[in-house]
Each structure stands twice: as structure tokens, then as C-alpha cells.
Image (cartoon, rainbow, N blue to C red; front, side):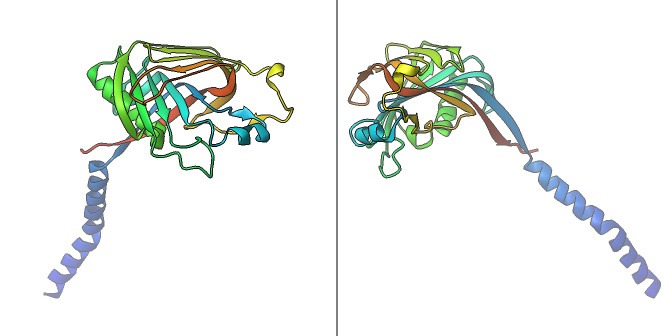
Length: 242
């Protein structure tokens, strides 16, 4: 009897750790996560100067800066497991207060999403999901999604020269900030970009236009130090069951 008991104990000691490890590995495999990356070019405009001296910035608070345009052009990568390479999505935003002001309450904001007409139905939904992830509260309340041809070109990344045409809704053209754009001699990047970027240069928006009725307003602004030209990179974790 004692011999049989000793054998059972030996079996448990030798094999149970292996069984436990196997069960743990099985659980890990069933919820294994994979990561995918997406990256490309980013363009942003605001109705308030972002490169400005504090005195000028304070003069616009509560009077400007409630409107914005954001655009992501995907150069490579996937979102929701779907390739978005070569596609663009644009958001036009109307907030309740000056965006970027730490003392203001700009949200909830209303937005219109303009999705690249070249996208397939699956890519279209992935672009919407991607934009809302990157935009956060900016794009949480989308009042309309429209499909349109989108043409975006960053002519000089570090020179901050870019242009964007999204159907008949959005027109943006930017240039680098020069010596003549320094009005008080104490300018700096007063407001950071509204979304996550890997690099962003402040720029002059020679043209910043949104035309539409879904935000209950349109705007047409010129020659403001109110733009960013940059790049983005984002990783997405995908859980996969096995």
C-alpha cells in the first residue's frame, strides 16, 4: 500500500507541472495578440494661430479656434487587418470653444468625415475606425460621412509645403513660416497638434476652407499661422483566438 502511494505521489510531482504549463500555454495561445502598424502623412489646420506669441494667442481665445481640419494620408500599413495604403481620410470639426485652450470646454464637437472614394466598402469602414481612433473626442460625434475624391500632396515635409483637396468640401494649401511671419518677435508653437504625430512642423495656411451645411457653417481663411504638416505612426493590437 505504501509503495503504491509513493508511486502516485511521484507521478503527480513529475507530470503535474508539465500539465499546468501546457494548460497555461493553451490559454495564452487562445488569446494571443498580434500587432500591426500604419503610418503616413498628416495635415492639420485651425481657425486660430498655432505658431504665435502669447499676447496674440490670448487675443484669439474664445473668439477663434473652434474650427479645424485634420487629414491622414496612409502611405503603408493596415487597420482592422485591412490594407489602407494610398488612401486618405479627412475630418472637418466644429467645437464649442477654442481647441487647445486648457481652460476651455470644446467638447462635444461635431464633425464631418470625408472618406477617399477609392476605398472599398471594407477599407471605407476601416478608414472611419482609424480616423476616430486617432481623432478621439474631435471625431467622436460624426454627423455625416461622405465619399469624395481626395488629392493630397506634401511637397516639402520639412518645408511644410502641402496641399489638400477633398471633393468640393475641403481645400488646404500651406507654406513654411518665414521671417515676415514673425509679428512680435516672441513666437513659438503655442498649440501642439490636435492628434498624435511622430513629427509636425507649424506652417502658414495660405488657404483653409470648408464648404458644407452639416456643421451649420462654412469657413474660408487665408494666410494664418494655423497649420501643421507632419507624419504619423500608429500600432494596433489585434486579439486573435486559436
